[in-house]
Amino acid sequence: MQIDLKQCCMLLATAEDVLILTHKSPDGDTLGSAYGLYYALTAIGKRARVACSDPLPKKFDYFYPKAPFEDFEPRYIVAVDVADPQLLGSALQQYAGRIDLCIDHHISNTGYAGQLLLDHHAAATAEVVCEIVNAMGVTLTSQIATALYTGIATDTGCFRYSNTSAKTHLIASRLIEAGIDLPRINQLLFETKTRARIALERLGMATLEYSFGQRCATIVLSQEILTRSGAEDEDIDGISSLPRQIEGVQVGVTMRERSEGGYKVSLRAAEGVDASAICKLLGGGGHRAAAGCVVHGTEQEAKAQLAGAIATQLEAL
Image (cartoon, rainbow, N blue to C red; front, side, top):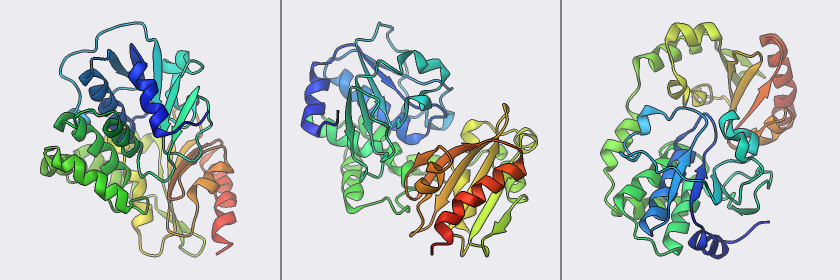
């Protein structure tokens, strides 16, 4: 059942022993939202902890708590930025049918939780969490603000993507006023790359192919490339934006070969093209500007499936 902000705040105000779940292959938004909510709940005396199926990226460790979480049996379970329980990953599947509340901004949310606070106009789930923190009367500390700013900044590409709104900037200004270290955060997020990431970009861009009259650009990150570059999961985060940045490209495609076979696909689309609609045809989803799916088969078979789905958008223009 979908609920509004007031109802969400009432549920959280009465919740005890809260477990906050993030999605697998965690990004800045799911982690920023989770830890922002965690710090807010503990600030008002709640017992809470955050869980993720995968290792946490080191680049976000500036907002992780220094002490380990207190262990407890959860009595209330919240998922943040998780559109589908399958995205929880294997380690958290035990909670898939027990989620009391989901806080999200994905229009593709499957409505799996007992209660759903969904704002698909929000640029990031961290925007929604910031409104929750404000509505609950929790003091916006720099610790809470740092986590939430990270979520918003990463999901908007440092406020460059089309999902950025005037409201996004207003919320960000409140977070900045809370005393976050803005220069340091932005440098860590957008101006620092590992050597493995640079190697991955070089090898990946060497696979670049154009299609649909150069309106679509595709790169492939094979298992060989991933191994040669020495890249870890956090090095891959953000690389999906590279093909779309090429002049004249309306759809940027990044295909990452999976060890179990097939390809994890990330799409980035220009204004007028719906990446979510393309990925939905292949069993995925996301946002108009950014979406993803998994495509099975060989590289050529996967590219053929993608071409068919992309054609539904580009040939209509």
